[in-house]
Length: 293
Image (cartoon, rainbow, N blue to C red; front, side):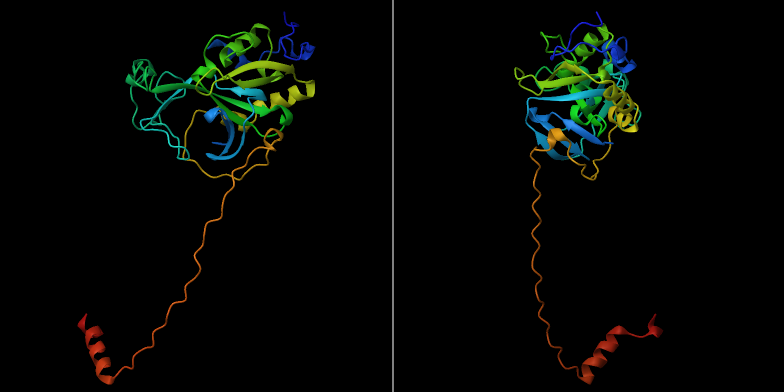
């Protein structure tokens, strides 16, 4: 079944990808702030240091997934999310089992028994503590370039496939069932327009060439890839804006208007009043002398 045609283009699976399934594909199937691609508002947004620098309103983008966190993580926010402000949660778990050791106010000793994990603890019937998975991706046309974090909310990760529309875990299982490494194919991530919130579905588009595959494997072992899938949170810090990759080259880049600077105002200099000997004596009397101390 490894030579079965699974790609949108109808391409066959090359010999060098046969039985090449990697560890992180198995992990997903089984179970800096850096640069980020966000799906907030149903739009692809490039985020650097917590600040949006470009966006792309296409319904789909093509990536190569070079790494993914092996566990489904959780995060809980007490207040209402405010765009542009630091987004460190009040409580989070990297393994989905217990709060991280860095959490100052854990909501429970275990995620399974946490009151924020009860249906209805969030808006409507939702849970206040949300699931998410972090992946490391590179763009199809820039495989040797920047590594981006793409964080997937629960509805983009869990669920059953509908035809060739698959949530991420189902997609990983599909590839694993054919012994295909996820880092060896171009993956199309597409917004599901039937959903009222941003939800992605995934499908394989084409196999990578041998050179592309070697590059993708190297990217998956890079420090940028490791950082992209780490479940850590910190204050947002400004980073230098990277060169925009091809998928964003015609994207809308927010304009920053220069701040208005008030013109300097010439201060009026008052003429000093003539000092009489009498006034000098009065001032000296107020100052006192060193002997008074």
